[in-house]
Image 1 (cartoon, rainbow over the protein chains, first blue to last red):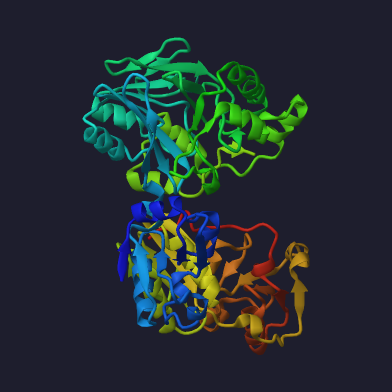
Image 2 (image 1 turned 30 degrees about the vertical axis):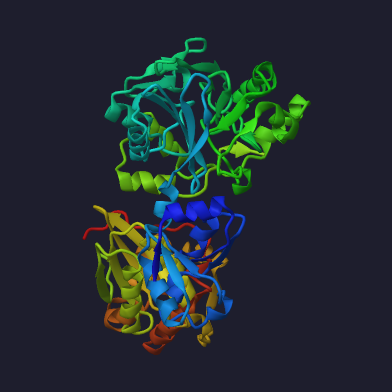
Length: 373
Length: 192
């Protein structure tokens, strides 16, 4: 029986390789979220249906392909993989289960910066979150860090860069921000939009439009651009005059939802202003880098998630609704279910509650739901 | 105090062991008995519910104290498939009015765990297995309504009472599985 890592599965998903997954979690949990990929085929049979052997499902398993057994934390998948091998199947299990999948980040280089340095995207495939690192002249800034902060410090170390700025585009409601933890452990400055941070219980530096932040001796500029709508403080960043980090305001195939802080009706106007008046004043050549993706088909060939601003104004349905009432109806009338535990996640990101790691993991379980299409 | 027939300690065990052990423990029990499972793994609740449903057992409920879950599972007794024979019944919907008449008593003959998580306010809990020893404390002058989950255990209870000379005994059908009126859950204030 082979052990597969989340990293290996991530590469298979990105390279669109065939993968047969026997997911042995209970049906409800499986329906809620699973490993997605263009060439991924699933069979969901709860492990407790297989305790007397896998005889009943052998017919449904491929003969000439390895079976990747997946469960919540790995214990049940080891058991089932053993049972499958007894049946003569070739089986592997995902080390750490869906917990490891949810926490895995795939780093992808987005591009070089004009005066030296690079921009990296960290793709959290299992949750749809995107974080960024801007590296230049031995210094680094991290944007929208997720709670697995070790990934960023190890990555920065590998590039001999010191993390000096940590920024969040907004107060997240779908996942726990690693911003504060990362800033504390590296001594970096933690930047938050003031209007999203009225209730936070810790010290931070306030992001102001027009006051740029620099990284490295070559002065890579990060220009904050106030773009409310998903939250009242949502702020975008223009990096090196080439990249537009849109946070949860604009995605590749969808736009931000305005209701996660409970004020959809109030913020829909702000969202429209940001998307229909502020962004169109920017260069169409900016590369949009959002804080989330919704579907695996939004991934580019190399696994990154990005698109030119001009292209999005041609393709993204949410940017092409001329009628304001119709727009209002789209973003307030037909919202998807809210993310798991989003209220508690907001409280955690404000520093109001301090759940332990196991609790944080539980709160983040399930799919990301920050967008409306 | 919830009375159970067996307690399984599955604390500090990771998936799949809590279900593997529960399954084994249930196999060794008789139909209709209640197993109490103690667990600490967060995934166990959803899995126990799903497993119970799939295996035909009844997941009754759970209480959480100091990071330990106490789950209550009743082994399937296939009561849905049994035939009722006691002739005097009242439909769920008519019960509330009946109980307002003076001298009426509602007896819930399900297991103590089932009663604790969900019962009609004012119902007296006498699990079917304890009915015979407690029958002498019941006043034959009262009018009795007997309820269980699906109407079968209460059917048996009605027959027992009638055989002992109780004249006014009525079975509530179908019982708690389809009860939409008020209920009480007394699991919260439970002492260990």
